Structure formats: structure tokens, C-alpha cells
Amino acid sequence: MKQVNSLEISPLIRFQELSKRYGKRQIFNDVSFDFQAKSSYLLTGRNGSGKSTLLRVMSGLLKPDSGLIHVKGQTNHPGLSWSKQQIALRDVVMYMHQSPYLFDGSVRKNLEYAIVNTPNSGQREQQVEQALQWAGLDDLSRSPAKQLSGGEKQRVALARAWLRNSSILLLDEPTANLDQMSRKKTLELLASLKQSGVSLLIACHEYQEFMPITDGILQLNDGILQKI
Amino acid sequence: MQESLTSAVFEALKLLLSGDPQLWEIIGISFSVSGMAILIAVIPAVMIGFLLAFYDFHGRRILIAIFNTLLSVPAVVIGLTFYLLLSRQGPLGDLRLLFTQSAMVIGQIALCFPLLVAMSHTAFQSIERRAWETAITLGHSTLGALSLVIREARFALLAAVLTAFGRIIAEVGASMMLGGNILHHTRNIPTAIALETSKGEFAQGIALGIVLLLLAFVLNGLLHVFQGKGALS
Image (cartoon, rainbow over all chains, first blue to last red; front, side, top):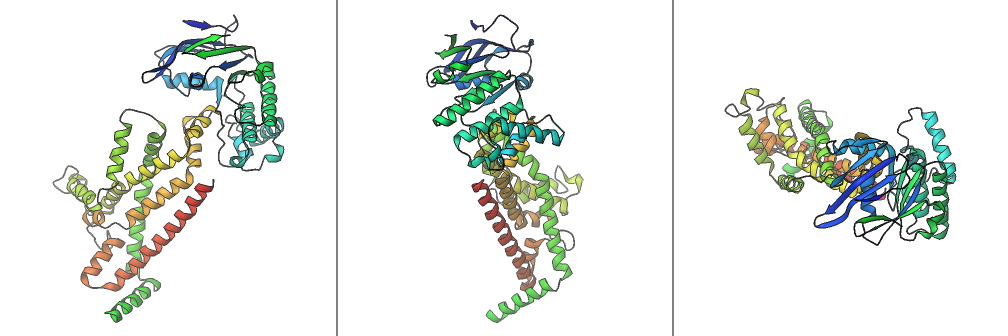
């Protein structure tokens, strides 16, 4: 077992001996990782090393072949159905695709989709206003989301994450294919999320730009996760 | 011949515009039977289309192949199959459904179901998997995420419903065999056209044909609008 411990306090989530293979290809094997509250990590590795697959497993979108997941001290033992483990994970973790998917409709409508537990419409509207302001999207609130630029789409996705308020945010190459200005804005928003207490795990190639918001670097190569 | 055709068309328009009760009753039966079939079939068919598009399970490919094969089964074969099932000697004979509107509805469900499944499958496939995953990761329940994805695919799904409705309202084989073409009960547009033509009474047949043509025109217009919106969104 290649245990990567971030800190020696009770973790938010403990992933233990996760393994995943596609056909004959072993993507990763016996990956263990403790996700501490309010911490931020980079996940690096070669192209095709399995970073995205690992993030998708950690977010509950993909079922691991084996391994244990403990969410907030609860052990999701092997007998527990995957759907129950998924529900437990989704309460705590949010995953952001490399190029975020925005739904048909305005920017505002897209932000509303991130508020699922606030029945009061006045409160919802207020939260959306705050998110628009937080991400600097005030001017675009009524624009069709699907027609935004890559950088603007990334800001909408981060505003949704801000509204969702998950303890852990997993990001797959959040600055890939963005221009310099958009990269800078994305990094500012990520720093703001970290400051507000969200734990981040960012899969990336060029990690220098993320160093100011990082507590540690993990490397996934040949199916093995190591702290560097 | 041309004179008799012209007079038949003239007579047909007169029947339509004068509100001939028998003619409009036949049109009403057609719409209620086909509408009911679509209403019953649409939800399970869309669900299956969704599962085929977004879930990987054992037998998925076989299921897709089966539904694609069922697409090309002729209406008369569906009619024959259900006729055998519903006839007195058949396994479902005790239900006494043969030659009722319910039997026609069953036949039309069997006809439109594979089409609805195949078209919803395609509709959901055109929506990226990321849509489903995003909805889930935003904290929506499975049902909530499903409604978001259905909203994304709404134009293509509406096109599926319109296409299926267009197919079953104009089919004659299953309706004739399962409904029996009984006046005031199971006579619908296509069976009435077949009957009137065989009797040499062209006026009512042409009038009903005009209704079907108009319906086809409206459905195609709507399809064009929805597919255009789907492509733009």
C-alpha cells in the first residue's frame, strides 16, 4: 500500500487502496490518500497517467474496481453498495470537468442549478447575485451560457462551485486552453475558494502557476500515487 | 376519370368543411387512440433511451440491436402477433380486448415504442455525458439530474414524439387487425380510407387523406422548428 498522508489529523475523506483498470490496462493500483479539510494539492503526471480517472473515482462518478472510501470518519465498507458510497461522496465532493459543461439557458439559470437545497426563491436569487459578483459575471448574467468564451465558462463553473459550497473541489486542468487573462482570473477565484475553506485537488501539467495556492504536490505515474 | 376525381375532391372538401359528424368521429377516434398510445409509451421509452445512452450494463448492445431491429417490423406483423395473443384462443383472450380501441392502443404502443426508444437514445447521445455528470456533481438527485438532461434534449425528444405520432396515426395494418374497423368504435382514418376506397366511395377517403396530409405537414413543420432549435441551442 502506498499511503499518502497529508496531515496526521482525522481526514475529511480517506481513500484507501483504490484500484482501477480498463480492460487489460491498470490505470492505478492501491492508491491511498487522506483528504484533509482546508488543504490544497496538485495532481501531476504524464499524459494518460490516469489523473482524470482518479479524480472521477474520487468524486464518485466512476466506480473503483477495489478499495475503501471513508467519508467524514464513516467507513464505506466493501459490502456497502456503490450507489450509497456515491451519495456519501457527492455530499462532500464536487468535480469540475476540464472544459465545463454549461446548460442551455442564461448564466443566471446555470448558477441557479447549483442551488438545490434552498427552497426560498428570494434567498436563491440573493445567492445567485452574490455568486455573479464573486466571479465578476454581473454583466453576463443574462447572456446565453453556451455562447460564452472559454474563460467566461470557467468562471461560471467556478461560481457554481462557490454556490455548491462542497468541502472538496476536484478540478481537471482548470487553466488548460485559457488565455493569460483568463488563467489569472481563474487562479484568483481558486485562491478565494481556498481561503473560504474549500479543499482543492487540481490535476495539471504545468504546476508552477498553482504553487501559491498549493499545500503539496502528488504525482501519479505508472499507477502509483506519490507525494513529491 | 378526371371529372370523377375532381368531383370526389370537391365532395371531400364539402364533407370536411360541413363538419360531417361521421367523418369527424373517425378523426376523433384516430387522435384519441394514437394520443393514448404515445402518452403510455413515451415515459418508459424515454427512460430506456436514457439508460442506453448513459449507463453501461450487461446486454446494453444487444438491447440496442433488438430495438433497432424492431424498428423495421411491419405494422401488419405487429397486428398479427397481438391478434393471436388477444384472440379468444390466445393467452390473453380472457381480457376480451380484441376489436376494441384498447387493442388498437396496444398495437400502436408496440409500433411506436422501438421508434421512441431509438430516437430518445440518439437524442441523449447528442447531449454530452458531461451534462449528466455536471448535474450530479452539482448535487442533484438522480431524478433531478435526469430532468435537467431531458431539458437539454427537449427539442430532439419532442421530435421523437412527433415522428412516432406521425407513424402510428397513419398505420393501417395493426389497427385493422386489432380494431376490426367497426364504425363508431374502432374505425380510424387509415382503416376508413382503406374501406371507402374498396367500396369505390372516394369522397370520404380523400377527405380523410387530406386530414392525414395536413397532419403530416403540421408535424413536419413542427419537427423542422424543434430540430432547428435543438441545433441552435
